[in-house]
Image (cartoon, rainbow, N blue to C red; front, top):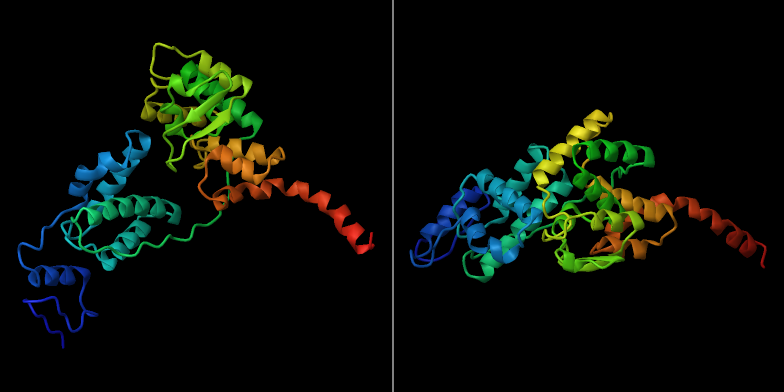
Length: 311
């Protein structure tokens, strides 16, 4: 039998209680001065500008937190329980979110809740466990697809076409290219200061990437700062429809980053250098492209044959 002591924090058994019953038990068992409820939207309003720089990533995080707030059956809380977290993950999965997408949303939630806990807004946090992501198939553009797609985008906007060239030859994320400023560039290199990993990186420029930059108006803050991300995405999707790629859900602007990485690996660049080029935090993220270098395994045969012959 469950016993609740409102003067303290003791619950004899809680196994049969829902997370929301536990939530209200916590409220009953604490004095009014100890409980100050909040919500994800309130916390994001307090700490969003501190935790995330302005840009497309913060835009995505804003949507993530808003969605998670709306999914909570009880949006106000002072303790964020494991049951609340599990329910969010379950609802996201029912919505068709992949594990990779869930991981991105949980990363934003975890960062926000850790800050709130440190500041005393949330009294208890759940354990966040990364969902196992399937390696899946990495889609990248071949040269004919690139040519057709970029040509169609150029008919819409020369600036958009030059932006695509820059992205595919640097492997930059969309937000990194949009946030680029003239002071981040030399004749031969581009430095990305605002990155997803929080670590800056610098990459050399191909000839056509350099030309794509120099054609931009230097009176603007950056070579691609005039581009509105949503309008660019709209132009991209219109172009892919025209060139016959409309049904390929993987042909999104991020495919340009995949294409850059794939070309580096296929060209014989070692995985460690590709990791540095892309700015991946862990080598495992870059290893998704390792299978593309499988043709290099042929050089292993003479080594093994010499060894078996005792030479």
